[in-house]
Structure formats: structure tokens, C-alpha cells
Image (cartoon, rainbow, N blue to C red; front, side, top):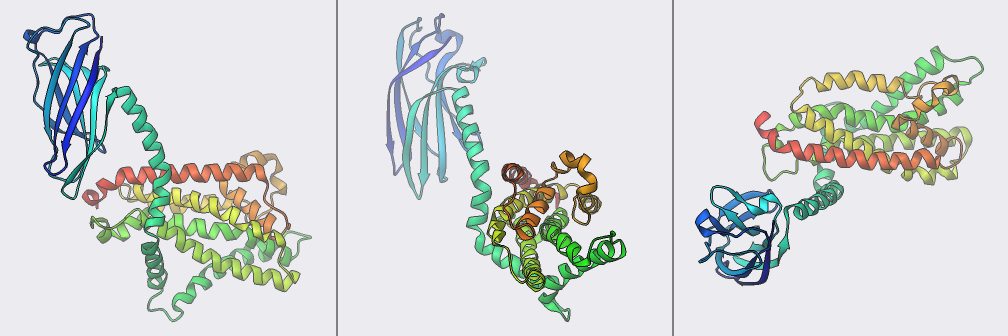
Length: 405
């Protein structure tokens, strides 16, 4: 059973936002449409972005019964709401108290218009179906999911820069060292681990210098990742005053943590390069491959931070849980020990994205070669997927934040 919509004519007055719509509807079903049984043609006006029904329009009842193959011309006057925005009108056959046939998969005539600054503009007129709209919505949703994380960072880059500077300076405000602690903290952390694993637990036949270079190369990506992920569960509660401001882009708060962690890593990389220069009297040419590792690292970290920041609003214990998970994650990543004794578990280690980063950093800084392509493209893919899913998760939950906080 079906209907066809022929010869549509639409006249839209831009000033009054009123549209006059005429078309012929043809009975392509096997049954006669009887006005006495409640058959009519009507329209629904929607907000296409949210799917919200705005207006349940009037019905036009045919003056006669419409047999299969016959046509009837109908007309409507549609007024768009005074608010600016996009609107979608669906004209469809229906039966009072029974159903709207477009909801049962029948074709319908669709009109899309946009109202902006006191003027209305007709965008499109055509025949469609619910299945076709769902497919188009899915395609748009995938496109938005991929582009929104990038647009979020780009459009709010100035805000991110200001917030990161504020975070770094505010973290150590009032201390004697001030922002100098941004350099000292990662340095002290690396020295502590080096003292434990390179001096106290030093393996026979291994020099302190070789272990220091090996260990510190693995710590470089871990510093930025662990700092951002460790703080992300509580970032929304920490900035609860921003969450309740409608004009503030709260999706940038987890990004601030990622950038702040990168600042700490940048200082650590400078120190590490100075260390390499003093020991090997030069830097490897392969250091040019470093951005190829940093980009997926940023994507993966941002995705995890978006996910944890959204979940942390509802699960207040998440910060304590993540402290344990981060500690465990550190020790299952070959940072402070060699991978040689764990060759039997190499396939399992390769599933750890931080392991891929650690191996890549060591290849770039210590082995003077590019990272292995196989694990690298998988890391890029994983980083992109995690970033998209993490942002979608955060975007889905953000409407509930003000109520919970």
C-alpha cells in the first residue's frame, strides 16, 4: 500500500514566513480511500535537528472517495514559527484515530525551510520516506561525530590557550617555584623511577646511562597521558561554575588537560634531548618522525579524557578507581623494564596502545629509525576511533551535567 505526491507547488513569503502548498495525491494502494472512514491528508511540522514535533497541522478531507489509481488535489497554508531555525514539514495521508501513513513507511511530501533574521527561505521540496530520512540522519550523524571533535578544538583554540595557561600558573600559584614546577615535577618523577629501577634494582651487565636513556624515552609519552587521564574524572566538578554557564564550551575542559599534559611532555622532551646531546654528542635524524607519534597520542588521550570526564560527573569514585588503574597500566607497559624476558607475551603487550607509543619513542630517539608501520597505523586508527567515540559520549551526557552537579 502506498501513495504518490505529484506536481507539488510551493510559494513561500519570506517576510511573513507563510507558505502556500499545493499538490496532487494519488492512491497507489489496492483499497479505496473513504472520507467517511476518517481518511484525510495533513501535515506535521518538525525541528529537524531534534526531531521534535512543533505543529500538528489541519487535515484536508477529500470531497469524494478516492479509488485506486485516482488523484485528488489538496492545498495547505503553513506558517513557520517566529523563532529562527530550520523547519521540516511532512505532508502525508492519514486516518483519524488510526495512523499517519508516513509512520508506516509510506512516501510523503517533505518541505524544508529556514528562518533567519526575520526572513524565511525555502531549502527543498521533494518526496521521501522514513527509511530514507533515517539513512540520511545516520550519514549526517557519522559526519558530525568525525568533524565535531576537530571543530571543537579549532573554534575554541583561543579559549583552550587561555585556560591551559591559567591551569598551569594557577596550579603552583603561591609557591616559591611558581610555574617552574611544571619542569621540576616531571623531572623529579623520572629521577625517582630511575633511582628505584636503574640504581637500586639495576640488572647485571647494564650501565646506568643506557638504562636511563631507555627508561626516560618510555616515560615521555606516559607523562602526558597519565597526567591528563588522572585528572579527567574530576575536571567537570573542578569547574562546576563553568558547567552551568550556557555560553561556555565545556567540551574544551578535557582538552585543556590534554594540552597541559603536552606542555609538561614538551619540557621533558627538551630535557631528554639535552641528556642525549651530553651523552651521544648529537640528536638522531629520526627525531623528525616524532609528530607521527604525538598526533595519535593526542587523539587517544583526548578520547579517554572525554569519556572519563563525562562519566566522572555521575560516578564520583571514578578518580580513585582511575588512580589504581593508571598505576597498574604503568607496570604492564614496558617502561621501567626490558621487553626481552616477556617475549612470550609480546602479542599481548602489542595490544596496549601506550606500549606502541613507548616503542615508537625509543625507535625515534635511541635506534635512529622510524616507528614500525604496522603498529603505527593501528594506533592512528585506534586514536581516531577513541576520540570520536569519547567526544560522542561526552556530547550525549553534557545536557545532564547541570542537573547532577
